[in-house]
Image (cartoon, rainbow over the protein chains, first blue to last red):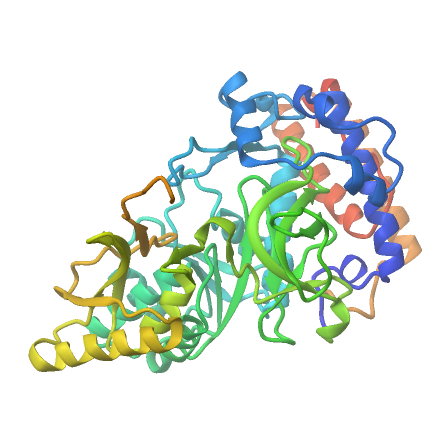
Length: 436
Length: 69
């Protein structure tokens, strides 16, 4: 087995714990000394990891936004003067909240890039590979780190920020690009575009490794992408708040997303009691950053639902535990429809199982006082009885898998939004009543 | 190349630490912008390399020193 950094990735667990405590101790000291926000939150005299989890308060997004508002743009949160930043990033703010803004110092950025290198190396990326990163190269941290990681590893990078999907497909084919970084939603878009162009990606392109991050995806979506490209899809995730990649999928066990335990100290807590849950149980990921100096993070309640498993169940030799299946969903993704729990990934799992569906959108509506699910599907040029039959089969499968019969309608070809970033395919348009 | 069977030797680690100290000293004294910029990047890279090997180095900067490197 080959690692990006064997010392950190295969360190015996006991040594890893003591190393991480030393790192956390220093991080706390730096934060207390330099950040008014953290100075007010960090209890005195924390003596161990266990003491830390027992006494350090959880950090919610609202806490960060309040700190930002106190002293915009970065708030009282940073532990170094923001003028030391060499990059500024912020979240999109599409959830209705103001964006979270952060900056990276030179050191922070080198570390961020290294977390991408750790993931990419594990996925099989090597010097002289050619890689293309499909994202907007804007304010979002997104795949910026992957671009620089490919450079750092000795690969040739194709920065495709300003290109449309057809140009990207042509680049993939013309240059035999082996490595691709994008969201699963955008991978589906590229597949659709290639079909429109008459390009068989699996046969004509040379993509071997796809890092598909930034959003949960269904197994069907992963399989569809792998089959269309003839490549292996790897999951990975990072956040703007954390500043790097905190987990990456291991080739040794499908779905095993190793936590980068050099760079973070993660806990998994019960969503309601907020007590630790055991290996194999669902809970909310709570993360502490151990590497960043400009903007630090302690016990951040991420709202990511995960299932943690011990490193011994993977077999790759890494001593870093893993999240089975990565981020399963977000706490606030779950919707109750007539007593049935529904998430975007569950809907995607059903709809994507039909090869004829190019894209879809779903919404929850109140019809004559009753919660209903509406699904609009784009099936290309399919019309008439064949389209009606497809809608019927989607509705039937939905009912069989999820337990609710939806209203399924055909949308005109190409009319549904395609995303280059995270796709929003479930919209809650229900009329709220006093009883919720 | 990276390989589970080839961690840093004690001698290599020592040389890296000495290089880090030398670069830190230079960053404190050099005034040529182009050289100082290179030193800043080198220090960030070297610090990360040493940290990845669990080598104890100065981890966080004093805010006053941060402007230098």
